[in-house]
Image 1: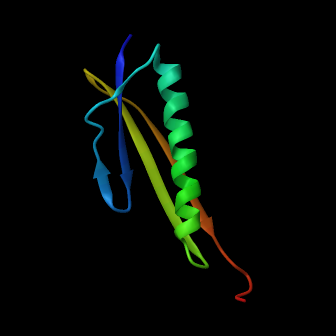
Image 2: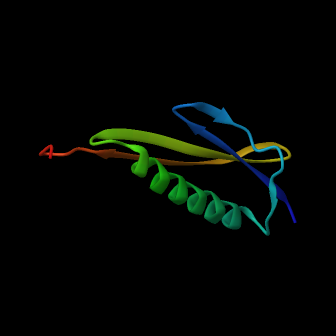
Length: 82
């Protein structure tokens, strides 16, 4: 099984994955990256106060180098402040 690494890139810089995961193929790596971004997006929304925007991505690589980038961006715009 190939080993894939998931490097996080967000507003705080890049956090490289030093361990990686053994996954059956690139489709499984894509699913893992998408699940991870979903969880991170949930956490980021919880920390935004009022309005804000965030973009984050995971660069997936194998032992030969980058194989894909999964990117997620969102914005919160409140029409009324309570």
